Image (cartoon, rainbow, N blue to C red; front, side, top):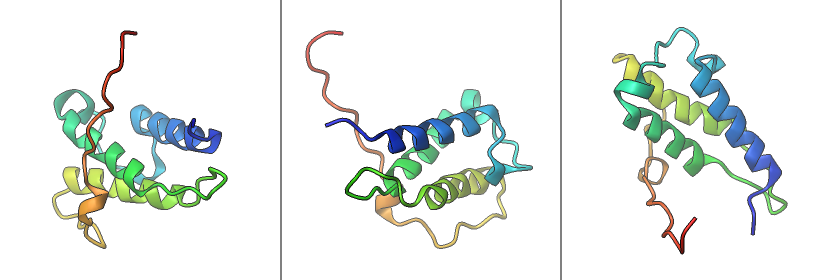
Length: 106
């Protein structure tokens, strides 16, 4: 089973605005240096985005804005010590899943 085009679009859009430094939810947050200096913060933001994202049975993303907010709130809290994430993250939101097992060669 392939992921839906809606999921692909959601992931691509989130990745673009995060990597370009133009995500509207991170306006005035200086976070681009994390890509080279602390990539684990970016990794966590993408993990939160993927963990929170939900789709309906047809593969349509139903909570794109909310998934982005949860992910970008992590970056805000990482970069701005006075920013508090509300509600606090639940364990399942910040879980780092292992990559799939490699099968064969590329």
